[in-house]
Image (tube, rainbow, N blue to C red; front, side, top):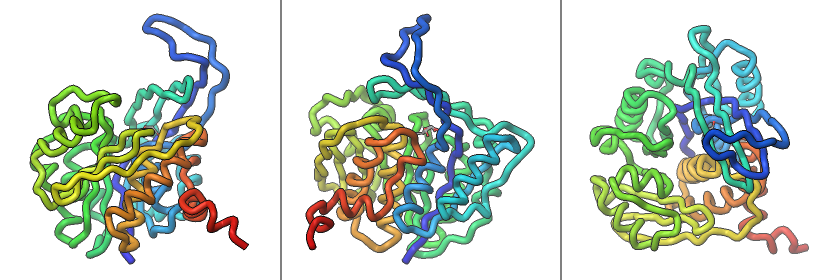
Length: 310
Ligand code: RIB
């Protein structure tokens, strides 16, 4: 059984809910302000841990009230925090999120996340069968150093290139599994993609990425499901029809679930189907990290009849 190591961001999400998003220059009256543990790295670690994987998070928090609260929350999820440092040099990462009609806008202020370095990711010892996961809310040189060490140890690397930014070919060469949404795929493939585009457009864009044929690309398409390119062959895992409350963290739930399943020795196709079910539960709840499902919840969503049987 492998373990999951996540090098990534830890944020406090400050969420305002309203009936609609304000236009530029406009003020709208909201309903509530809510505080949720978040950050792509922390969300992915919580997802993997709640689904049963031995999970270690590598990251930085500020030495402040948000930092203390987030550390206590993450410890309560059973995540190994030996490589999470609290620093007085910067404030805890913060995301300002507006949610209206189940759609969100997010502004992230990296704070302490920007201090994660190559030295931080060199500390944990990875081994063959482990899964190394990262995203783009920590500095790119730290991610490259993390993946190089993971590769040298025989671990599998998963990159979620979110939020979309320019990055170099050397980093992509260190990636075994790329998990991204349409916007991130468009940015990486240097083409305009829309969520209403035909699947073939996504397949074409994914195939255009400079990745070897034995690498895996998964495009998460929200309610349309997930498109996977495995060994050059594409397949679709259809989306599940559920009542969406808040999509924040759903992509992170998916990534963490894939990592947990691969660490447990499942095939990539089984892992993707499972992660698709997990993300469909996450979107039915408010908040990012607190909305990650347990393995029992995913089982019951995957085979509802099994639970009803006497
Ligand atoms: O992917 C969702 C996450 O993005 C939020 O939790 C927020 O912190 C931002 O990092």
